[in-house]
Amino acid sequence: MVLGGILAHAGIMFEERWYWSQYQRSSRFEPVSAVTQLVQGIWEKYPSRAREILRERIYTTEIVPVLDPEMVKVSAKRMSLVTMAEWKKLKLLQNEEIVFDPQSSASFDDQNVSFTETQAMNFLLRELKDRSEQSSLPLYSRDRAVGAMLLSVDGQVLNYALNQNALNRTLHAETICFQGYWFQHREAVPAGSTLITTLSPCRQCAAMIETSGESIKAVYLEKDLGRFGSCAGRNVVFRDL
Ligand SMILES: [Zn+2]
Image (tube, rainbow, N blue to C red):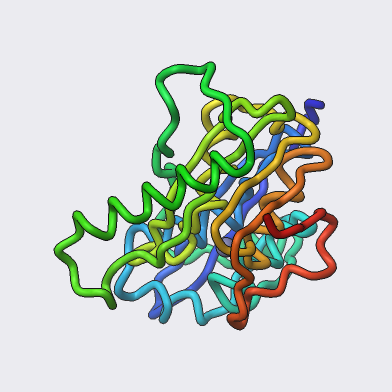
């Protein structure tokens, strides 16, 4: 479904500087917005200062239900809706546009690779093990070991990714999977697809599932008992493998 979306804006002020993003959504099932662009772009560009910048309030002319509130909860702090007239008054002389190009997520060259849920999980566990064995980084600076794969109803691999959140805290495996799919295809994930993930999705990733396509299920290996691990209440069917 294509909507003639309006251009939405999001911005945040930190130390007399105004960081802003704009984005025009074209579909109901689109895991990207002005707010996600701003938050993810700040983490990408200023990994060492992002936490400090994003402690400030985000102002936006459009809040995308489910998606924006959950990304703000997990990867930023607070957000307010403003009118276009209010927005125009916010812009300072010292300002900087923030854009975010998602990491190109790994996909198979061969479009016809099919997996069962168990094969997908084993594939992800092997990839995580390989990455950890090849890494020379100390444990604390590594990405949290999580992998995710998106399978169509007939088991075709639509995308897969490993966490890349050591620097950009928003880049959870599931988020990369869904945003990568969107930027590559510019369309909703096929209805009824399944997300296979080694750890139960956090609320930000649960929001990605819900806003990327219809009736997408999530299958996980381990339950995340962390602060944002609870994805309860989201309109997604979860089960463990
Ligand atoms: Zn997550």
